[in-house]
Image (cartoon, rainbow, N blue to C red; front, side, top):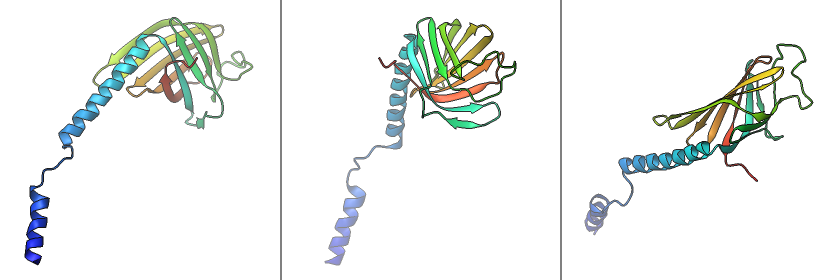
Length: 172
């Protein structure tokens, strides 16, 4: 009786069809999902109406600050940008570039807006500049296929800062 039970168990384990996915099927499904996310991200960036919400900032000195307690947004609408980002860094030209908000604040037109798509890495890189006397900012955004984004902000009067967050369609 034990032998019959053992043989039945072995035959069920070794000869029963397996209904799970193979590694290749899992890889294909993951690649397909990633490609779909990347296409959605490219379409969002190509439409030039999107926003970035920062959740962390890193100063040029390496200090990392969580920004979730206040809104830190960068909104792009065609050829205009609306920037309200907290700033934790060093002013290089006295107090000339301080504003009431204490951060990087700009509302107006962008200069030299360009995008580059890296299909191999599934990223979109966006570069643009803003000018408002005495400040000049250069923004470099790297948007990954799932919308997570890193922004590097360089200035003529401030040390550079980096922001991490998410890029998405603008909430109305």
